[in-house]
Image (tube, rainbow, N blue to C red):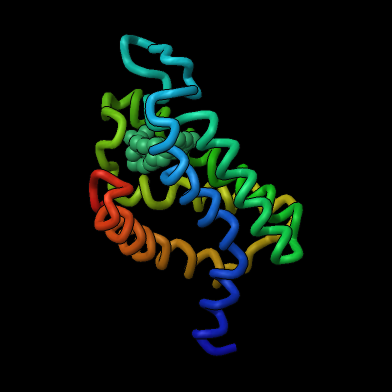
Amino acid sequence: MDILNLIITAVWFIFPAYVANAVPVLFGKAFKGRWPMDFGKTWNKKPVLGKGKTWPGFFGGILIGTIVGILQGRILAGLLLSIGALVGDLVKSAAKRRFGIVSGKPWPIIDQLDFIIGALLFVSIVELPSIATIIIVLVLTPVFHVATNTIAYLLKIKKVWY
Ligand code: CTP
Ligand code: MG
């Protein structure tokens, strides 16, 4: 298999997770400040998760990501990639808050890979990714992420380009 084939295989494999991760950015704007997943609660005077994590974002991401998986003919993988992506993102936000980083402030690399790591771990229950897929996805995602966020920023969907 040549490199282009490996890249297409990797992107196809992870695609529902990309969608699941992108949906809340669009949903989040509509539900700004409403239905926070941490119910506005704090822990040691810091938000548990912060305003950036909402229930509509969480379930909207899982729903649409799973639909993408169904369209790919991989319902269970689609569901696990989507849940893993959203859970990975939540774990990252909880960690950021514990380090005192306010919602929306960047944590480079980790902000880009949180959902991928969650998705890869969860999907491994039903579809084990190849080493090539893991490496390609980890390398390409930060590049894709900055590119799509720049587009979202230019469209005024996101406040910052990263
Ligand atoms: N979002 C949401 N619900 C989620 C995840 C994301 O509503 N479960 C929306 C929010 O509007 C959020 C946006 O998607 O602001 C971008 O998500 P992300 O970059 O992960 O959150 P941040 O706001 O940057 O917060 P954090 O510092 O916790 O990463
Ligand atoms: Mg962020």
